[in-house]
Image 1: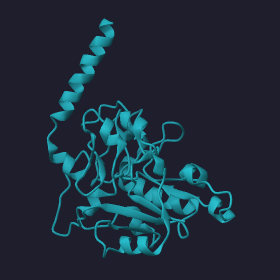
Image 2: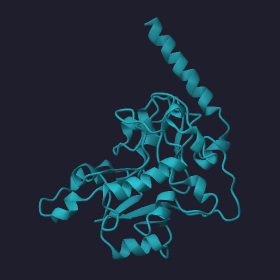
Image 3: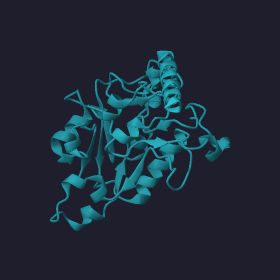
Image 4: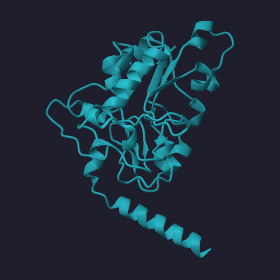
Amino acid sequence: MKKNRRAFIKLAALAAAGLAVAPKAMASGSAAPVKVNATAVHAEHWAMVIDTTKLHTEEEIGKLAKICHSIHNVPSIEGKQEVKWLWSDEYGHTFPEQENPHLAEEVHHRAYALLCNHCEQPSCVRVCPTKATFKRPDGIVAMDYHRCIGCRYCMAACPYGSRSFNWGEPRKNLDLSKLNPEFPTRMRGVVEKCNFCVERLAVGKEPACVEASHGAIVFGDLSNPDSEIRKVLREKFTIRRKPSAGTEPSVYYII
């Protein structure tokens, strides 16, 4: 009993220390402040549309994942301790609630790009005891690595498996000669995930996967009826993952 009490007190102390971290890091959605210049792009609600008729093979998605992981210093680890921001999966795992035996065979054989859904009602944010994961005013669900105490409540709450935990020292699985100095590396015992490239938006660039997709991924302001993403959503039929979870994902798929 005394041991459990000591463990609880230690956890509470760590949580309190995390809440004392300066909010400066939160502005960027990462552990380090991002330099914002006059070319920064803004939105009331950032969202993404992935056209699976154009982006539908493991090889294509793998190339985008490699770019994403390189830019964000994601460690390369195989097996159960894998850390991933962008990856691919089959239709049944991607849309388990929207299975239709009469869909075209080709649709079932596609690979689907998966990432954090930056939900409007993020369950991960509700359960985080230190606010290490938080929703920005522009809809992006971000991470403050300094506040993360490694409880993994957010991972348990996420219906999409979009978060990874650093079980070991992530820097040991990085090529230190190829690190991106513009984005922080992480430490052991923290959770990480896709951040919609907030550090690139802050300097007027599109997310890396959008830029490299050659039009297969559209990114923009969901609140602006004149934006390209709203035009695409008006003209194309789209679905989102696991609608019954009630999280309202900001990532849409053209099927």
